[in-house]
Image (cartoon, rainbow, N blue to C red; front, side, top):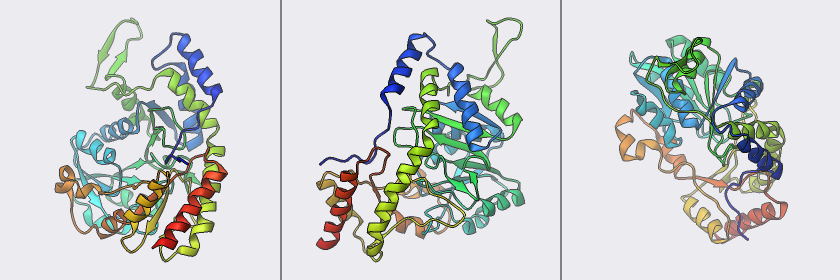
Amino acid sequence: MKIPLCKPSISNLELKLISKSIKTGWLTHGPENKKFENNFKNYVGANYAISMNSCTSALECAIKCIEKKGEIIVPSFTWVSSANAIINCGCSPVFVDINLDTRNIDYKKIESLINKKTVAIMVVHFSGLSCEMDKIIKICKKYNLQLIEDSAETLGGKYKNNFTGSFGLGCFSFFPTKNITTTEGGMLTLNNKKMYEKAKKIIAHGIVKSNKKSWKRVAVLPGHNYRLPNHLALLGNSQLSKLKSFNKKRELIAKEYNNNFKKFNHIIKIPFIPKECNHVYQMYTVQIAKNLRNSFVDYLNKRGIGASVHFDPPLHKQKIYSKYRKGNLKNTEKLSKQIATLPIYPDLKNKEIKYIIKSVNKWIESI
């Protein structure tokens, strides 16, 4: 049996809708983007939303909207795009440690890293679980810092009944591994009108169209082409309508994993969910004890199961980011050596789930 780590759920109807959209001849940013953006902001609970070609573009756009260059506090336990966006916008990442239970940013470690150069805090909602937003928002207000939410992995995740991406500048991914997909794609959510208007310019070459002459286009800032094509926005809108059912299926799979693995708590630590949060399981990650993680992943891979690791090495252990390290990151270093990711996606079949669980049980017996 071959079971991939993840697989997007794209229906035949969606393929037909994409084909029909392409046949209209409208291939770039268009009317479907407006529909997608409107539905997305209403879902998240933000004032504005802008569809983009990736979450990385959304992160860069969010940083450019701040209009200040300096240091941005961010976890080292994240994908490279979080730090790349900061560096490519002329700022410097400052890596902060995580909480071992939630695997999210440790708010208690943030204030010691703040100085006069700090302009923002970038939280990364890991694998489907929101960060502890009340504490982080309080810190941002105390030091007059912008809040950026890397919500690439947590579409539908809540903290105290508010969705991720509604607290600050929300950045979402629609990569094929995520809770919904547009193949490649992303979204920026905002609550500030001035930032929204600037972001609209940034994503379209910095150009403002003339009201008098349709052909007259003047750049008011050095922008980019971050736009999402019209037919992919159509796919995103269709996927968004199914997000609730997608996430419910992920939750049910995770529940089955949890029920079977919790008896091995001395070896396999299942995901922890604080009472203020839900979990949308963009990934299902476990912490493997006693330096057994590599054995665990290798064993499952040999049985055709696409288990993987997120994230090892952490960013501060990679040469190009090592100079941005400040202070102790012991939890990050420990977790990166123990974390493992199991397959989870809406179309995962019951027989495949049982095979994965059976394989984990066999691995436990073998150690």
